[in-house]
Structures are given as C-alpha cells and as structure tokens.
Amino acid sequence: MKVKWIDMTALAGAAVLFVGLALQFFRFECAPYIYLLGAVLFAYVQVVATGYSGANAVIRRLRRQQIFGAMLLVFTGVVMLLWHRNEWIVCLAISAILELYTAFRIPQEEAKEKNL
Image (tube, rainbow, N blue to C red; front, side, top):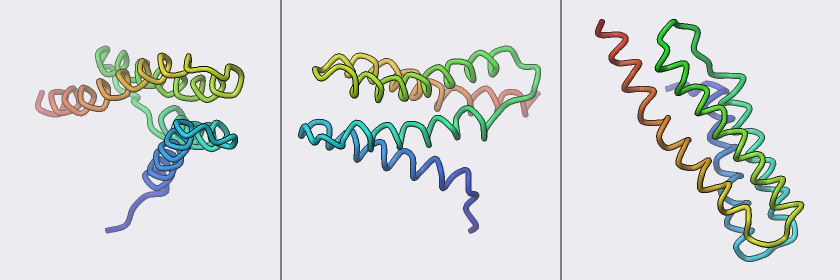
C-alpha cells in the first residue's frame, strides 16, 4: 500500500514531537528545538495539507478546533524555549484534548454526512 507524503509528514512530525517531549522531561537543552520541529511539521499537515470544503457547519467548527489545537502545539514549543519552568504542560494538555476530540469527532461527522 502506497502511503501519501501527507501521511508520512504527519507521522514524522508526530514522532519528532514525541521525541522532543520525552527529551524535555529529562531537561536536555536541545529538546525544545526538536519538539518545535515536530510540532511545526504536524501543524503544517493539520493546517495546510488537509482541509474541508463542504458546507457542514459541525465539521467546519471541528476543523477550526483542530487547527487551534495544532497552533497550540507550536505555541507549546515557543513556551518551552522562552520560559524554563513547566508552564508549557498546560498548553500541551489543552492542545492534546482538542486534537484527541477532533480526531474522533471529524470522522464520525464525515460518516454521517456520507450516509445522508
């Protein structure tokens, strides 16, 4: 099965993001930069490469929430660089909740839309 470059970019971004996050817990100096690279790759796929052009208001709202979650992932990396305490955890938690919620709800709404 051939994997698209969008899927590969998202997977690579998520993996690099996770490695940077794991290194941040051990206080490596380069961890915020690694995390930020992964967050930018992941957010790029979320914002630019995937989209919805339909008229369903619920899916459009969920896409906005998904994009906001992706931007919060990038903002978390900036907070890691600027503030050297643990404030970034709050931002990461909010973005993780938004990304998780939209990851389940968007496919449900798309399935409902197909069945109509």
